[in-house]
Amino acid sequence: MRITTQQTAWPIPSWKFFLAMFKIRSGQPSNEIVMLRLWRLVCLAVLVIGCTSWRIENLDEVTGKATQEEIRKELGPPVEERSLTTGESVWHYRIERYSTVSRATLCSGYDLTFDPQRVLQRWDHVDC
Image (tube, rainbow, N blue to C red; front, side, top):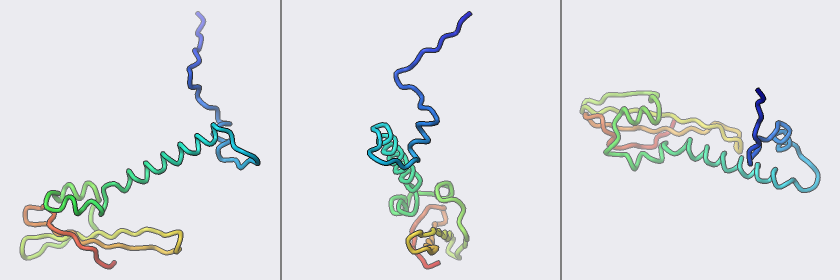
């Protein structure tokens, strides 16, 4: 029995092709390299947008609707949880990012206040 392979219209690039996209060459890069670099840029943009799609920016949209469970699922566990005498609870989030421009760690703090039914009622930006 003889097994034959069928070549597809889009062959899988060899390792040399992937290696070539990281090399700096003199002259103009080939069309394949330009397209591959463009594709990498598009993928990176989608990844960055996807990773930051449900963060602090969305709290305005979900205020009055999101429950503690939904917030915990999207933002992770808070740094601190406080219960108030009114039955409300306050969750504190601290988000630290390293800036390569200023070469410093940037910090943002957020207090999320939930009503006794555990629904987000308001959020405030606070100093770290």
